[in-house]
Length: 231
Ligand code: B1M
Image (cartoon, rainbow, N blue to C red; front, side):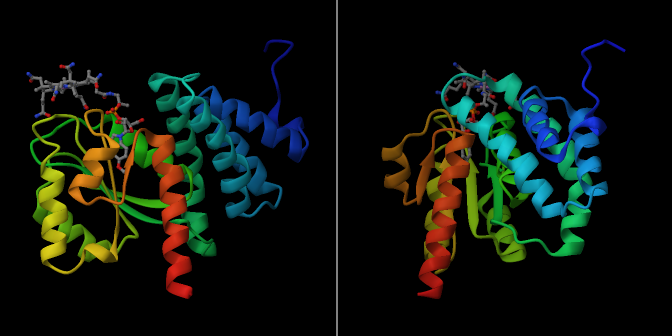
C-alpha cells in the first residue's frame, strides 16, 4: 500500500464527502461504491448520500464539462462511477420513498444510431435525481408516444446527430399536438447539429447544448411546471 493512500473508513463524514467529490471527478467507481456503503453504514439516509455526496459531486463535473475543463472521456468515467454509487442507492431510495426531481423519457430519433451524447444526458439526469427511461436509438413516433403513455414522465428528451434525422423531432412534436398531448410534457431536444432557432421552429420547450445544460434546463422547467400546477 502506498504511504499516501487515503483510507476512506478513517475519514470523518465531511472529509469523506469531500473525498467522494474528488473521486467522482476522477471517475473512481470502486472508491465511490465504498464511500456510499460507508455513509449508509454510518446512518446516512440514501437521499442525503445521493444529494450531498453524489449529486453535489456530479454538479462540479457538470460545470467543468460545460466550461470546457473536462471532456467527454472524463465525464463518461465520472458518470460510470456515479452509476456504481446509484446502483447501491437505487433500491434503498425506492424503499425509503425519497423525493425525486422528476421523470424523463429520452431516446435518439428514427434513422439515427448515435447514442453517446444521449447516454451522457441520461446519466447526468439520473445523477441530478431524475428517473430516466432510456428508449435507446432509432425511435419512431409510435415508440415515443407509447413510452409517454406508459411512463407519464415530466419530460420527453429527443436526441439527433444528423441533419437528415433532426427534422423527425418535428414529426414527434406535431403528432403530440394532433393528439392533444403536447402541453402535458416538457419537450427538450439536443444533438450537435441543432440550435436554439431550430428548437423554437419545431415547437420544443428548449434546446440543450450539452448534458449540463440539459440538467439545468430540466430542473428549471420542472420547477416552473410544478409551480404552475400548484398556483
Ligand atoms: Co456519426 N456523424 N455517422 N457516427 N458521428 C457525426 C454526427 C458527423 C457530424 C461526423 C462528420 O461528418 N463530421 C456526421 C453528421 C453530418 C451531418 O449530418 N451533418 C456523421 C455521419 C455522417 C455519420 C454516418 C452517416 C456515417 C456513414 O455511415 N456514412 C453514420 C450515420 C449512422 C446513423 O445514425 N444512421 C454515422 C455513424 C457513426 C458511428 C456509428 C460510427 C458513431 C456513433 C457511435 C454511437 O453513438 N454509439 C459516430 C460518431 C461517434 C460520430 C461523431 C464522431 C461523434 C458523436 C458523439 O458521440 N459526440 C460525430 C462528429 C461530431 O459530433 N463531432 C458524428 C460526443 C457526444 C458526447 O456529443 O452527441 O453532440 P453529442 O451530445 C452532446 C450534445 O449534443 C447534447 O448533450 C450531449 C452531451 O454533452 N445532446 C443532448 C445530445 N443529445 C441530447 C439530447 C437531449 C439534450 C442534449 O435531450 C434532452
